Length: 218
Image 1 (cartoon, rainbow, N blue to C red):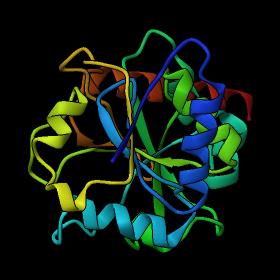
Image 2: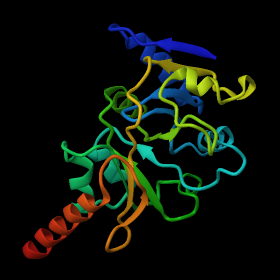
Image 3: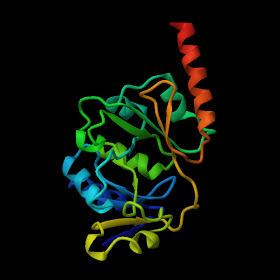
Image 4: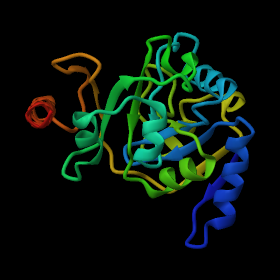
């Protein structure tokens, strides 16, 4: 496994990572929550490789991170509550599940017809997704049921050497404990899929306010 350690002059390093992603490879990458298996979310073969890394029992939906709202609008049907949750700076990371558009492969959604997306606060992920022109898979870089990794060492300790991706980005240890709250906005009221660092009751209140404002102006 080739390890890239980011420096201030990181243009060539990012280009090497992009080459791997464009070839359908998976890259172990730091994020604003934990280390993740990043791959081109619109490349079916790349998504299948991520499933293999997570383990044979992992065949559900895989959430993604996007570079900006324009990319999000190409993938899912956004509404006002989703926009608020994706862009509110006071919230800890929130992943919103929304109806997918036809360009999103079923392999990524697990056949659910919906996709979980997040607008990360990690500039590296935004830059990679923007340059790739595709969302990046954002599942934690550990086998299913394993420990959430907050350093590259914690990833390597859980994944057999023969199964490690060909490339990893090492930015050192990340702050432990920050978890994205995952909320399903395809139903009303919203449904909590995974508890995280943003309280679900706060999310529900924000969704109610956004829906009420939309109904008053419609």
